[in-house]
Image (cartoon, rainbow, N blue to C red; front, top):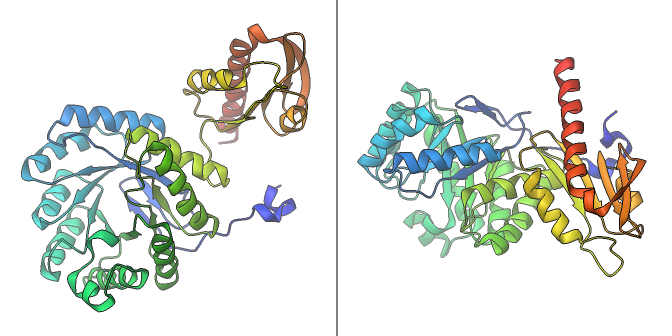
Amino acid sequence: MSLHSIRPWRQIDRRQSRQIMVGSVPVGGDAPITVQTMTNTLTTDASATIKQVLACADAGADIVRVSVPDQASSKALKEIVAESPVPIVADIHFHYKRGIEAAEAGAACLRINPGNIGDSNRVTEVIKAARDHNCSIRIGVNAGSLEKHLLEKYGEPCPDAMIESGLDHIRILQDNDFHEFKISCKASDVFMAAAAYQGLAEATDAPIHLGITEAGGLTSGTIKSAIGLGNLLWMGIGDTIRVSLSADPVEEVKVGYEILKSLGLRHRGVNIISCPSCARQGFDVIKTVETLEDRLAHIKTPMSLSIIGCVVNGPGEALMTDVGFTGGGNGSGMVYLAGAQSHKLDNAQMVDHIVEQVEKKAAEIDATANAAE
């Protein structure tokens, strides 16, 4: 039975969008919301870029974007695409020929910015290249690079200007009988981005790529993205997301998954439920959680683990997790398995034992899933 049937307050009704393909990955429709990131290495350094793509893919990225600012980057892109285990999106600005070259190099999708790609004739050439090479397109509207005529019309970047820009360029693609596209309308201002995305969601059935652009560093950017993307996702808007952080792209992937996990929209790896700790804690909660996050990073199976310092909330939280540990007294605590008390355990043995129990439970979950296929 779905939890939504007994807990309707957890229900998120996703906006009905049409589905496109980004390489082998479906985006939109009833497909899972995908997590994207973008490399920050020099694309011309193919080995460094490939290394970063592989790290992001291992962290769970479904799609990785690579900037293609010059012809040398176009040449390197072909090698990067060949080595990538996930679809590669080519990020194109200013030079429409880079879009053509990227399609020829095997990019799964071209991200073009309407504000700086050039006139409709140039966009049409990029569309032809995309069609010829089975490549989708993302229309990437950005508040910081809107077309001059829209800035003159509206006086400043605003949601209406962003929506108009996006719809104008959707029209160009549709006039060329090209429908394999998704769209984004990013801004660093959370309110502007949210309003623009809501307007676009009502105006088109195209898959929507969510993002709060230039969100900031790891801490501030995570919070800003969680607020902006989280509220839109809660409203059912969004088919693929990218968290933009001034940090390692792997961190973007982790934050993206955490946002989706918190809303029950996507699950990957161990979801650790832990208390902030206080004077009641029976063990060092913060150090234990840090260690477990590192020791359990290899687990890809969706499952839950509660690590609670004392018996105030520990037993209740453990009832709702696959594996749990609640601090007690005299240097020991209680292990919970599948929501039920199982056995006491000395704190000194806690980390190794919990890792063992989580790995065992993950294997059971995987075996059950494989048997059902």
